[in-house]
Image 1 (cartoon, one colour):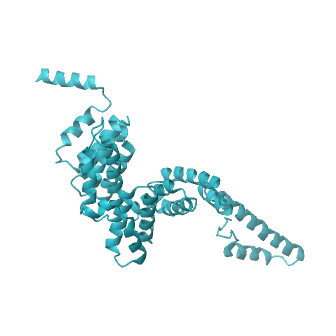
Image 2 (spheres, rainbow, N blue to C red):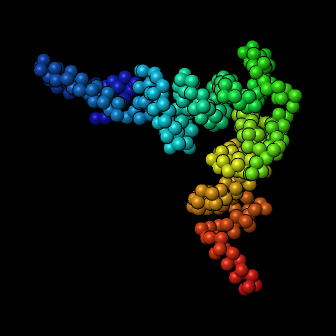
Image 3 (cartoon, rainbow, N blue to C red):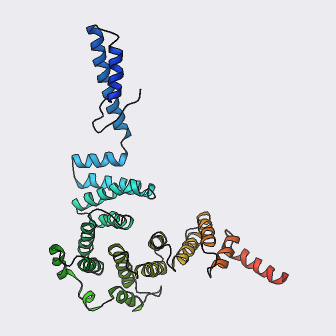
Length: 330
């Protein structure tokens, strides 16, 4: 007989009926006592099984709720981030965990960590309940973290969408003055990237602001026609600063959300190139090159992808030697 677990870990109706059938075979007080004992034992067994089946991350959240403090919050959030990394492709599973992460980290004033949960929550679930509320929270977080360029985009886009919302009206005073004078504030931030460039050829502070602004616009107005192109440009900016995790995240955003955009093939190809050249993960790069050649057979970079596939894992010296040999043979 299997345990039928519920929120209270009680004995199932079918199990009780089964035991009553056994009881009907006996009429003595002794056997009645045995029956009641079986019910108790089965309940204890089910409660034990329920405790064993709860995931470690859920157990840590329960422990935090029993005694909320910063230390327990840190332990839970560390476990949560490992859990999210391990289950990132299971969107149905991770949504409630992202929501818990937002709630708990905000309650503890850990706003930098809150952004780790609220950003994927808004990105992965465009039909999220209380999306407006989460976006408003994001604007408040960015403002508190002194990222007024990002908070201004969130607030201004929300004000366009909900012009009569009295709570959002209060955010007008928090807008960056520059965002009020530039019709295309994101483009203005992009133009600042080449002002006083560093050794990498870009202004790092301006580049970071631009990337933040692009992410904010993509979250609050994903249907804006400028968003896909901005995501690709922001990924290229991140790559130029050699912040590869951010670049990969932006390429993925474009590939997953805007598969028909004309920059999506480029994003797929460059992602494979980064995996090969910068992460030294040739097998994963190979998968992306094959996908690129298969899905975009007429693209300008197909021959380059085929060349990279053919020479995957070879050193530059080996490739140059093969090219030289080919020239001689021709």
